[in-house]
Image (cartoon, rainbow, N blue to C red; front, side):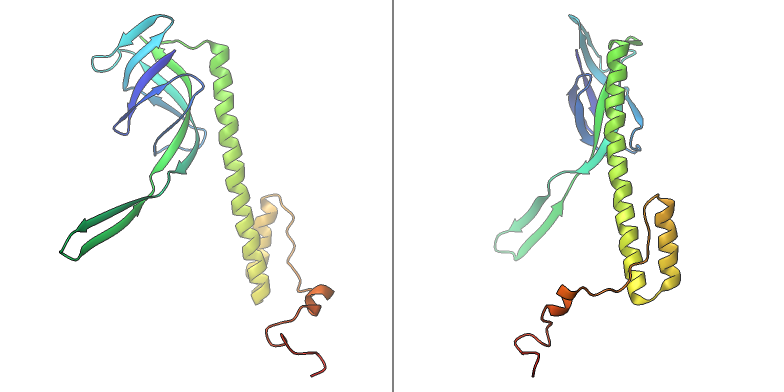
Length: 196
């Protein structure tokens, strides 16, 4: 069972449970997206060909994550004219897990399979969401350490409160120097003995 959909000016052949990379869509993580531009549906020996789209056809997918493609270099050059332009580009993508294919207004995917694909997509989106929240927590901890180091105690306390709201252990770091750090030569003492 598969369908051919059109999005972002491109056509994709998709099947239930497949994760497909399409150009960036304005949708949140874990959101459900429906594609109405279905050009062809093939299931159980039946093929529905659109003219240009299949009547009552739609493909339902769940947003699993977002990402960016590899960087490409665009280089323009005119010989003997001193004209050179270099530009880089990275395309933004949305990764979708296909959960259902419909034709003539009816779902072609059995209910138990559809629920399994939806749960799979939700788990992937939750993993990405937790990773993003962890990145925010790490940046908050870095801000806390910086504010404590420069002596901005009010800002450091606000950062600590923010971290505690996120459910992590927040304590303002204290300046402690370990014996190993004291023994390491610094830039000023490098190459000189301590007796000098």
